[in-house]
Length: 524
Ligand code: G4P
Image 1 (spheres, helix red, strand yellow):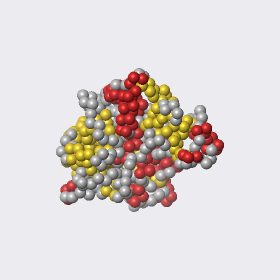
Image 2 (cartoon, helix red, strand yellow):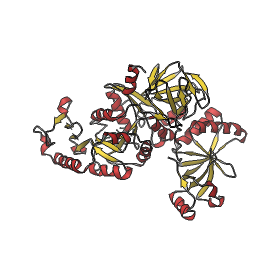
Image 3 (cartoon, helix red, strand yellow):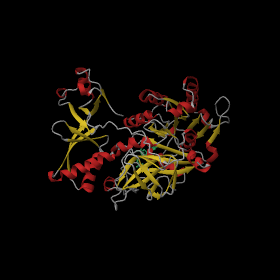
Image 4 (cartoon, helix red, strand yellow):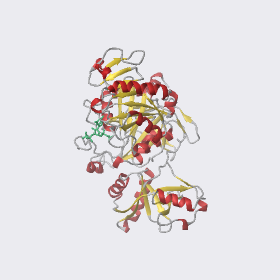
């Protein structure tokens, strides 16, 4: 591999921002794009609530809802780094795509609202990142508002998420009295309300302000010095290796809206966020990003990005080597070769044609129905396959059928394809053979219904079964159908494996007490 390509690979930083809705993910993304010069005005990425900047017309359903359905990718340069941010939609837009996006990043930034602390969706996304062992950086946002005590938040991180933390900086006051941050990493104080170099105040050897400053007489400053002393004595030590493994999260405080602490965060984050990481094949062989041959895997397929065409775009995370437009790739699963002439790279909501991309980058390849989520793509002569993407435990279920029984052939074809694509999960009741669909987010059902109608010309009817606790069974042979009941449905997944769908956690515990020999497990 040439030096220049190696340098390009080293410069890549590919990450996702995870958070519960409203923690400020969009706001901080805008600020980051702004610093990277990718947008001129911090406030133009999307304005879902007002609909003012509803830029995406990828799918009819997006227009109807005024949201962006699936994760997009944003690329920009900062200093000597090329940054790829993968968006992870939440709330009503939450779906398996959100989880799968986390399979394609090398690091995650976790946004936490200072007033709300760790929220449910943050926990779910965090767990997926933790499972992958990627570094997680925490940004505690909205310091311009009153919120929880910083020490309590650090404790919450450790107790709720079970991750140790290291405060890279510490707030001085909050809300209307937010005076700035005490930057332990850069050894300075960054003050609110000052511009340019005046923002930064030097510290002396004792860790206090080196020069006289009105802040010194405030109770907030004194409190911060006390907290810092406590952190120095009793807190965790900063340990780069533990950060890299995801065992220790560096914590930053700031305010995305007022753009305070964001640039310092970005610069420090870039020092520790890893370059593109190797990936294992099914044979557990490591594929190095700098290995000569191009390889990647598909983590998402987006239908109908351009409403004029019915084509799809497959999102590829490049694992190794260089992609060049027009090159041929093999999909080892089907042993077929494709020439990639129509490819896309992403920047905010504009899609640009890409001529060259390297390990760490995300490209979109044009798909007429050949690819599946999880597919490996390789250049050259190799035919290895990367480790499979995990399947996630669905939480919501519907019973589905075609409105018109004459359409049942189309119905089954449509379901088969959408299931293969990873849009939705397929289950079947044991004797009646009813089709059930499982999802992690409500939006998946809406997308399913919409696509069945538009792509397969089938109107479906869906009966909502609500949320269920799905559990697979280690010792299937010991299961008897009589164990199932109203509060524990027994179904099969698409691989013919038995699954119990419990009404709730309580029903599951009750089942466990009654049948202690049945070993249940969940997916991620
Ligand atoms: P999300 O993508 O994580 O869902 O959150 P988003 O950035 O859309 O932010 C959610 C709300 O929180 C927005 O207000 C946003 O302006 C506000 N916000 C984000 N960062 C900060 C911050 O640092 N301080 C304060 N005080 N507010 C912040 P909204 O009124 O719900 O929406 P909008 O009408 O402003 O778009």
